[in-house]
Image (cartoon, rainbow, N blue to C red; front, side, top):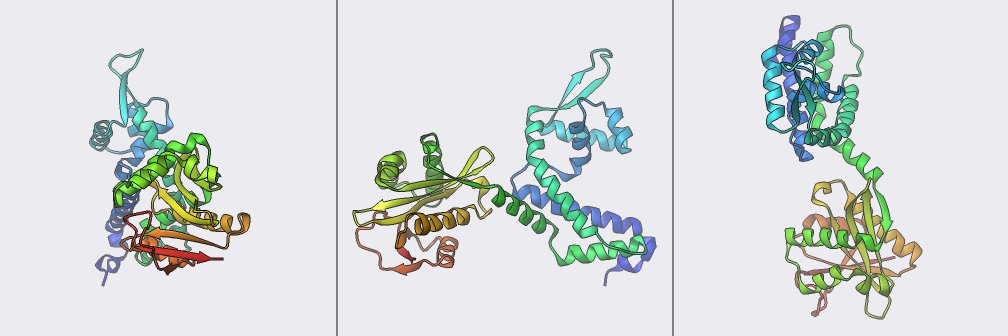
Amino acid sequence: MDALRGFGELGLGSRLKRVSEFVMKETQIVYDHFNIDFDPYLFPIFKIISNKDGVTNSEIQNSLQFSQPAITQALNKLNNKGLIIYKTDKEDKRKKIIYLSNKGQITLETLKPLWINIDKVIKEYTLESSSSLIEHLNALENKLNKKSFSKTIIDNIKMEVVQEIKIINYKNEYAKDFYKLNVEWLKTFFVVEPYDEEVLSKPETYIVNKGGHIFFAKLNNEIVGTVALMPIGNEGLFELTKMAVSPNHRGFKIGQKLMQYCIDFAKNEMKLPKLILYSNTKLENAIYIYRKYGFIEIPIQENSPYKRSDIKMELVF
């Protein structure tokens, strides 16, 4: 039994405090998931500073009507994180003007899309007709207990990111991205074998100039993922290979989007009869996804090009 609910209107203050603390905790989970070093309790003051071209301590207090100790504490935290800077007022040397630092500006741009989604989800959770505030709180807490607030926000953001991803073809200017993304992935799970180093260092020689294709996932102006269709031998066989996603963008289903694009391209544009791939069974999630897209296990030859490979799979169109 929820004792606070049983207190009715007498428990209003405590109910609001509980909801506030819950939302703050869930919002922190969102920030942590996307590796953003930010405290949700700092949001109001950080937002006030970001909205103005210089603001004083007193102006913050007048805008938010927070206690002065609370504002001072928050400003100290923002300053310790390097998100704000203080400048002396040109006319009154005793007055300090507060601005976002360069790091603060970068953090702001990172936070903006998250704030948009948090705002949307809060509206979704609070869109309810009720005859009293207590009744509204009951409905809100029921939703918060039934559907994870943080997971809903994270899923919404991931969906938006996937929709914004553009798949583009290889250009020489992306050769460094191709190398970096793959080496990063290999060092995370295995080691960079000599064959990897050779192919990754010369993608045009081993892939593009032989009739293969390299694709990239581009988000805004950043390359966040890659995959290749590499010819094998002289029999028109192609390997789906060299798929890697930036560590900061894993979990957004970018790899699946690249895979689907590759499969469609191989089938519809290249008119290939099948694709093969090599992998390792310790990558359980990857193997699951390959099977999901129709790949089936076939015998692996003794002279496999990759020492780490212990499974070979095939997709027949």
